[in-house]
Image 1 (cartoon, rainbow, N blue to C red):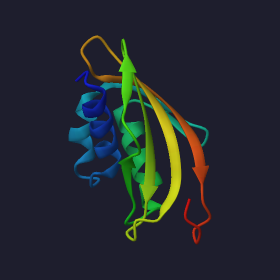
Image 2: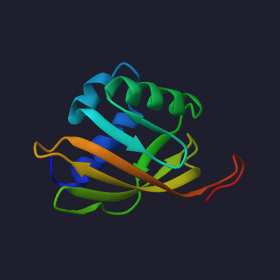
Image 3: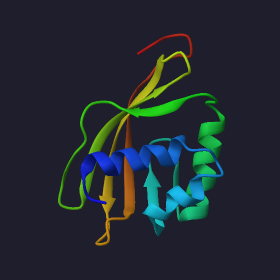
Image 4: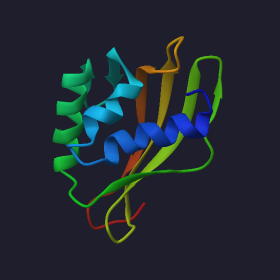
Length: 123
C-alpha cells in the first residue's frame, strides 16, 4: 500500500467503517501504530479501535471524505479530509500525515484540525 490515494482512502474507511469492520481495517496498520491529533491519541490496535469508536459515536451518521488529492514522498502520505453529516454539511476539516512502515502498513498518523464549525453552521 504505497499509492497516496489508496492509503488515504483505506485510512478514512477505517474511521468510516462499522465497528464490526474496524478490526479487519486495522490489519493495514502496524500492531503498535500510533495516532496523535490535538484532541486524542492512542497506540496499538485495541486502543485505536476504542478511540475511533468513541469519536465516531459522537457523530452518528457522519462520514469522512477526501478533500483534494493526497500526495506523498518516501514513507509519508499527506491528505486533507472533511467530516460531513448526512445532509452533506461539513462540520470539520483536517489534514493528516501518515507514515508507512517498510511493509506499507500505517505506522503513525499525525492529525491536524484545519477547522470545525458549530453544529448549525457549515464550513
